[in-house]
Amino acid sequence: MSIGNSPEDERPFRDESQEARVPVGRALQQARIAAGLTVDDVSSATRVRIAIVHAIEADDFASCGGDVYARGHIRTLAKVVHLDPAPLITQFDEEHGGRPAPTPAAPLFEAERIRPERRAPNWTAAMVAAIVVVIGFVGFTALKGGGTGSGSKAQVAEGATSSASKSASPTPKKDKPAAPTGEPSDSAIAAAPQDKVTVQVSAPNGRSWISAKDHNGRMLFDGLLSKGASKTFQDSSKINLILGDAGAIELYVNGKKIDDNFQPGTVERLTYTKGDPVAG
Image (tube, rainbow, N blue to C red; front, side, top):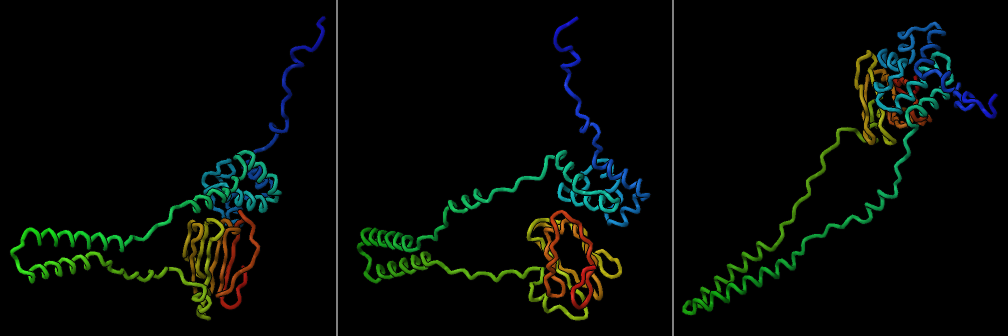
């Protein structure tokens, strides 16, 4: 008979909660099957491509294009299959290192403050130096060629001084007019024709994937809009938009700003027509 704890009592406890937790992609797949939906049904309802839905259900988020878009896709798919997206987003952040910390702005301003200022060339000093060189050259020539007439000396001095003045005088350069940008300004958007719909999409708060189609379903743009960039689309009757990260986007429709409070990471599908902007 032994006294004290047995070796079995010293074994670490098993974390049942971690073992029982279902991966994010697997949870979405189980909920989809329980709801009686196929991958095609989910793709049609969310506008998320079939290949990306398959990858997410396999817990492969590389094809999403980044953690921000992965969170948006998880939130969108969870709503369609009747799941609460908040626990899935939390689990995704825990498994992928969490949300990135914002970059502090202080070092950027500090670097900007200590940047040395560019100084303009000192043309006065250059001119004085040129005149001294000319005077020395004229004196040397006068001493060497004492037999020559004063008229020749005057011509040499005058020619040398004129050359020095021309070389020392800076030629002002005319600034070239700035090249016109490809995107129309807000005033151009405001003056858009009344018989068409004009939509300007800009990304002042960060980059976002966007897709734009005309009323016939023809693709106008499908790609990543970088931070600070903008795109303008125009059609005779209707523009269909999909915003991958709506929180980073600002919209101007027919010259009017759309003040919808889009949340970061959300995927929005919008339709705009002629007249007053109406979200589809």
